[in-house]
Image (cartoon, rainbow, N blue to C red; front, side, top):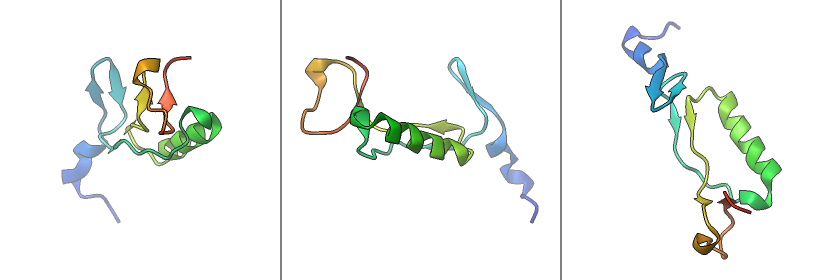
Length: 80
């Protein structure tokens, strides 16, 4: 079945800031609970989403400083 031409714009690249997404499909933030505690699971989850052809993927909340860490939640951390 051929795609309706009115949807062609969804499959065109789009520039957002310094990055160019290959299409206009964006996967919203979705926490899987792996966080920095299970980096292999987090990487596999992101890889699986990328295989689906999404142009942009946003996965999980990430703490950016120890003082902002939510100890009771598993999250990704961008600090050590």
